Length: 202
Image 1 (cartoon, rainbow, N blue to C red):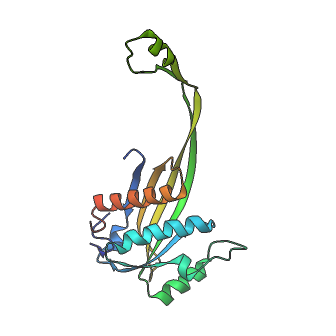
Image 2: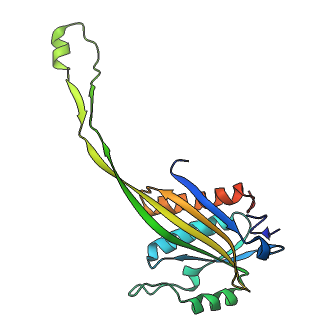
Image 3: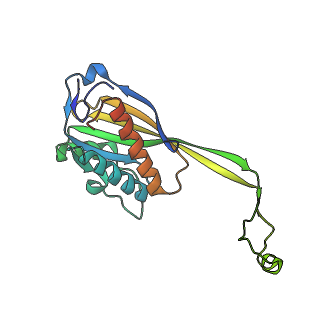
């Protein structure tokens, strides 16, 4: 059984699609300090998601090192740190596990929303002159098309010493309207699933 970050074997806008635990290798492991990295060259996305994940992890009593703090990107040429850079920083910071999050894919679906018509409700008047001066016919909305987006995130936990994967979670995020909402939904989805599977402390 894993203790520390992992405790056991592994709303409409957010859900998790799968959890896998390396039960054989994870047996008896205990992690307390995680090196956190989000795999994207988008500096803002990397910063926001790593910050939200770090806040959620530290709220459970664990230590976290964010990659963006110790491996900051060059703004003129943003790109992900190399594997060697990550490995060296993991050793330097004394982390015993590495948590990597990455976007698997994005799907888009277009759906049609028909227009609607409704009668306006106006106050009652005793005299028809008052009624006529305050009467409106109907309220209509035009038909339109809506583009729904679905993102699939993969979250992996690795043992820092052996570099072997201990845990993997695939999460599905529906139609986020902003980066901050996406990050919040992803973090919420991930931790709810980990709690449901008794993989992390509630």
